[in-house]
Length: 114
Image 1 (tube, rainbow, N blue to C red):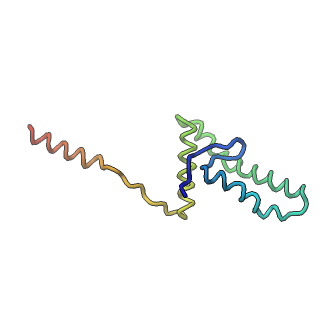
Image 2 (image 1 turned 90 degrees about the horizontal axis):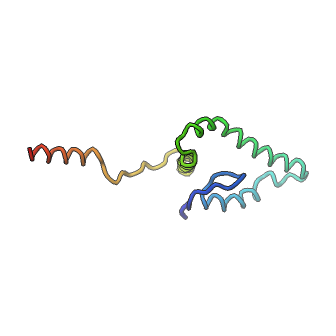
């Protein structure tokens, strides 16, 4: 199943459509739900949110320095997601064309014309 379009869910996180739908069962099946005391369970959930935000604080300066913060965050998220899916060995993107070869061929034909 393809991951679908990239989206940013308010308050939650950036994700793909597939990842966004997957958030619901992930939260329902989280081990935190086995905690009987609702106060402890709720505090655990809030702590998870705070920890997630704290882990991203170091990136704020890079996001602010980028020309387009939306594209920067989108590409960083999608690259990281691809890295996680393939256990650190993502496939290398295939280039549809090689600019160097085209340039060399054009240069050779130009020299021949002279």
